[in-house]
Length: 260
Image (cartoon, rainbow, N blue to C red; front, side):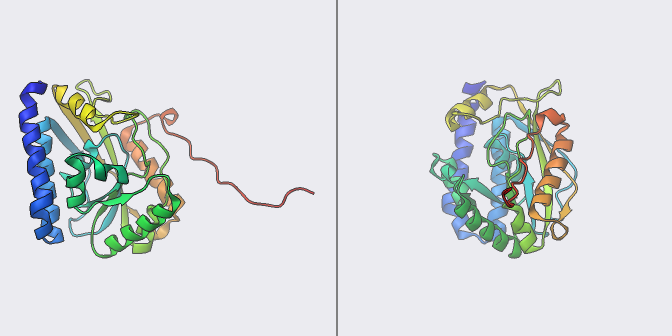
C-alpha cells in the first residue's frame, strides 16, 4: 500500500508546498484560507483519510476560537479541510521539511512550548487575530496523546477569546477503526519523527477521522479556567471517554499565612 501511495502523497505535498510558498503570499487572507482548505482536502484524499463530521462549525463569517484535543500532525489537515482558520502550532514545526514551509505560508501562529512568556505573547496575537475577524484553532493540551485519553487543557489561550469577546467551539477529534475502537495509527507521540509517522499512515488500508463540533461557549460568561474546564468536559463527552481516561486537573495552589 505504501508503494502505491507514495507517489500521489509526495506530489500533493509538493503542490501544497508550492501553494504555500509561491501562491499564498500573493493572496489576501480570505483567499489564502480557501486555498489552504482545498490543499488540505487534496492531501487527505491522497493519504486515504476519510472524514466524518457531527455538529456544525458555526457560521463561516463568525470569528471564533476552536479548541481541540490533539492526536497527530494530521489533525491540522483534518480541521483545515473543514474550516478556514489559522492554527497555533509548536515552534518546532516551522523547521520540519516541507510541512514547516506549508505551515508558515498559511499564517500559523507559532508558540514556544513550556514558555510562559511566549504563551503571553501568543495569547495577545490570537486575541488580535480574533478581533480582526479570523478563526483560530488551538490544541490546549499542548501535546499529543494516542487518542485513548484526554490531557489537561492549559487555559492561557482561552483568555484570548475572553479578551476578543468571541465564542469558543470545543472540537473532539477521534481516529476510528472499522470495529469502532480507537485507531492509534495516526498518533504522533513520543520520539516519533514526521517521516516515520507518515509511513505508518500510508501503510494503513485507510484512516477514518471523526470530528465532533460540540456546543459553543460564550466566553464573556466565564473565567479562562472555567472556560477551559467546560470545553474539556464537552470534548471528553463527545469522545465518550471514561473518567479514568481524562487526566485530572491539578488543584490550584493557595497562598496563605503559615501557622504560627
